[in-house]
Image 1 (cartoon, rainbow over the protein chains, first blue to last red):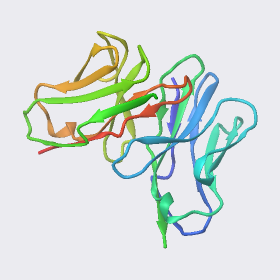
Image 2: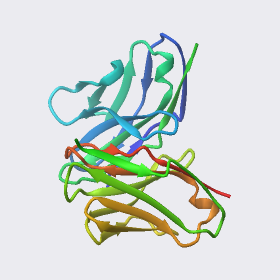
Image 3: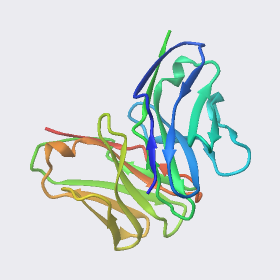
Length: 113
Length: 111
């Protein structure tokens, strides 16, 4: 079975500063990787996904993530954050040939004005 | 267009009362559907999934049940709510074979 670890439960960042949200996964087979964002009292919205090919994936709202197979990581980054980026971010993994998503416990990103 | 609807948005229920949350999908047929629960500080836990009418798989033993009475309808129920059932419930649909589309969620508070 696969698992996802988000080491940081909360990350405070000053506005216009860069941010990195960490995600590590464990799986004995190849996987697809995802980042979702959840604004307060809303469902989850897909930020970006890695399926294959280039290890640097660009998503919506200026976010990007890099797949590192040797370190089994898929960290999310943004060079300059805005107040509107305040939300909870979830990393998720899905095995090839299996539809089920396994989620991390989430990272709450707080932007400080 | 393909959309997923969830209601109600918020619900406050006393301990021991019944529960019914509904999820419907539009613009597709025979979708696989999932129920997740998000408890404070615990991420998303898969509760049930369904591959078709009357077909329900449970991922964790609990006080809840699910049903799929129609192709595009997925219902989460409980006969008697517990305090521990409080949380944010999300319906999800693996729309494009790689990720999910989520409903807007139901915030359930059991008092």
